[in-house]
Length: 438
Image 1 (cartoon, one colour):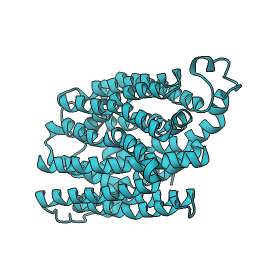
Image 2 (tube, helix red, strand yellow):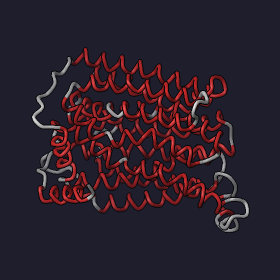
Image 3 (cartoon, helix red, strand yellow):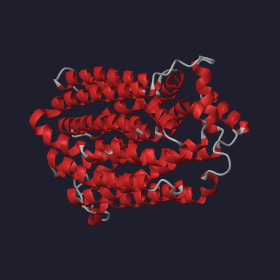
Image 4 (tube, one colour):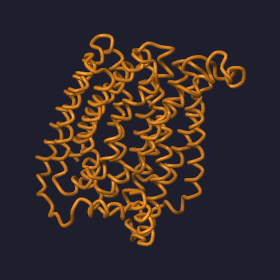
């Protein structure tokens, strides 16, 4: 368990640094441009490599020493942060910041599949939910500690100083990964019995050939689209009514729910994953739907706390269901594919939500806008209210996903063998569709 605790500590520090940089860049870009689209563009550059490169990163993690892969990913991401510093210094502006985010994210993409597969190595099957809860508690630093810390530091050191802190946290994470490698021993490179394409195909078969995994991936892609919208629109919603420090405090108060929800999941390792997933979806959808009802930092903190309390149940339920369906030998490459498919919702959200808010919902909810005399009487009007309305509409979508998940409960439940055989007819259909797209 000592090795697991080291991984959790490294994840905490990494999440803290990444969260502080995300907050600082969001405030900096929105303050400089006033555009939700610009904020979404930076977030898209930071996330796209994590999603697109996840399958290849999973293959590398299955092929090589997973702890060493994590070291290379976390250490190499510092180079991208240095490019971001150049952009923040005025040389190239938004474009250079986006390039730096891309470079850092490309290296960071190596770590996620390797981390998940390492946890599978270290933890018995009965401890999957508990381990997932611990990692989510560590990841909560990105939302719980980072906003208030970054908000307080922003006025003192600016965005550049916060990025330097992030680079320092990467070094700490590298140290934790090396300590785990020493504790459990280095893993010799596995024999390359197949090339990259063949191993990706194997992971693809394991994911799309299992009905429960396919269904979960589709449902969670819809959820990640909604969550991506929330992440994209927090600054456009809150900065019109508060300073960077006040916004950081509101985000931290909201994120207390994430800590509470993660603790609840970790304390109930025997909970039924399907029920956990449905409960989380209902809570998240209801909280998002309520976001637009009132303006102000306090209301966002309340609804945000409810949303964050529900998210760990969603994540842990889906995580346990997928983990129990996939054989250990292909965990990393399968997780890479699960990530790229389910998190495609984030990419879509970052690509479309900003323009929709800037050019549709914000004008509708502006003072004197088309909805000001109807919906605006309930939600309020002015800057940020159109973004809040968009979040609430997507909350209703999450409630619909909860209803579908409840109806498909029998299909999603783990019964009989933890790794049911792949249905090859389904695999052929999916591979054919993939080939048709080129």
